[in-house]
Image 1 (cartoon, rainbow, N blue to C red):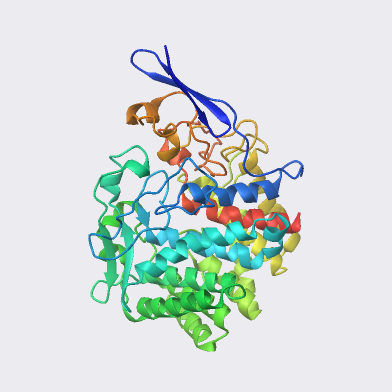
Image 2: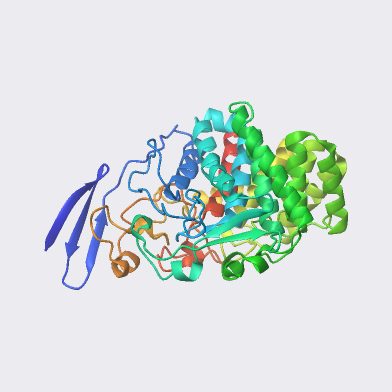
Length: 472
């Protein structure tokens, strides 16, 4: 029996009651990002979509120009348990915890794309949206820095949060706030946030001098905190250990932060610090991934961009050569770093390869390789892994808020997780986790390993797309 029909934007969403289950059908809704007609893949449209995804992840009071109108204000009491306003920032993935460490890494990469592929952003008409995505995070980080040696690195408890499946606008569970300070330091967290704010300073310095000055001042304080009060942030915030524990130590975050501060300021003090970290932590031996936990490859590129020094260029070249040649690939051609978020890892390396092209490091080889990796995610040769893009894109991402029908319809958690139809809300531009090493993939909402989305999944993807727009 048809119980209710209502409008969802330009689409009609029908709820059919079948006695014990609800069956949903969502007709096609128009893509908010216009196509330019570029073939075979419209990288400009995709850049717009990838940035748009971050609007779905916004926490706090939403702005008047919010394009994804199925989202509303949420988590407006964040920080009330500690007497600070910690509203804003981004929900991490398909859930509603605000994990500061991967959020900061995502912000650094978003800012980096705006800096080094600014022509790609401008030609796609996405500069203002890209800057807004960065600022949504940096505004939050400024709130989190509540003292010279104090920074709030997490709001929400992952275990409590994962017991809830529904809309963020309606959640009522406790959202505790967790910090690092002089007695409980967190070098990775402070260092990564310093890098994000230094990169963001470069994004805003020509358009908002006052704001960029605040970003840079806070970046310097956080780097000082990271370097002087050393300790693993996941020891100081043990609630993060099951989700974003730092596995490889904090040397790479110190190098990454110093590199960005040197690039932002030209102050050789930071270059000297970067050299000290390089030697102290033996960071010239390239790792096999570039991710929220492994920053050294990115630091090579930032130092090469800032100095032109052959040491950094050659180390970046060696790093990319090793990754291209030594890492396994899926049969259809995706470089395979890890079974968890395989697309994310490949996208990060694709962005790094595009930056190498800017440095004239095997420019043609790196750009073509990056293009092949991104094109795999867009459907060549298999199918799209980007929600809303392509004829066979993911329709059931593991993402709680988009799995719920339009307000005020009740969001039944069992139905929202297990119903067979597409998510009622189209999560435009979200890059899902990706395939297993044999290219196998199923568009299954419960499969969080391969079909969840996350802020850091889209970050390198966004930068790589901006580079492809600029150089395609």
